[in-house]
Image 1 (cartoon, helix red, strand yellow):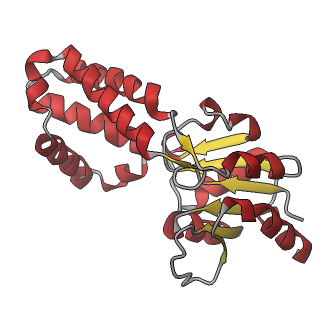
Image 2 (cartoon, rainbow, N blue to C red):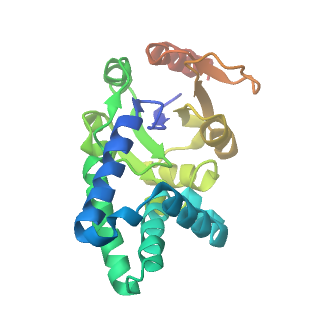
Length: 231
């Protein structure tokens, strides 16, 4: 029997772009207010160069979007002759401004109705490589648990982030369906973890893995019921 549904968040339950744009703007505004004499140095090319440098030195940081964002700001400030301790503090303060807007996400039209339906009969968990806090959004009331890669140090498709969720919930992988939009992170991650994947594929891309898929979130409750019955 399927007892638990785990969801990706960004691009599965909501459009993250408006929130990310606003959060990024808030972050750089905060940094510019702290260093008005350096604000004209916060250029795209300079930021991109710092990001490239950070990733080349520590490729694994890509899986932790929070650490990556803070480290890029830190490296940028160091390059502008800000002392290390001050650069670290300033980067973290600017990141707080980012997070103040990060959860202002735009839900997909069918998200609320779908979660209202499935939450009556299933445990609901978020497993995300992003840094949005689902409990600070309007759908937080439907979730029993949230696992974020930046908090646990493991990112999808590594099965470890899935295993951690099942350990916390006290369920078994065969009881779980994972739903997400990314073939690499969500579908392959679910396969790695021994759970049933459902690919959220609104654009109708080719299903090369032959996994269960939905084109609309409204299709999820009936598909989950079919999978549960087949179990």
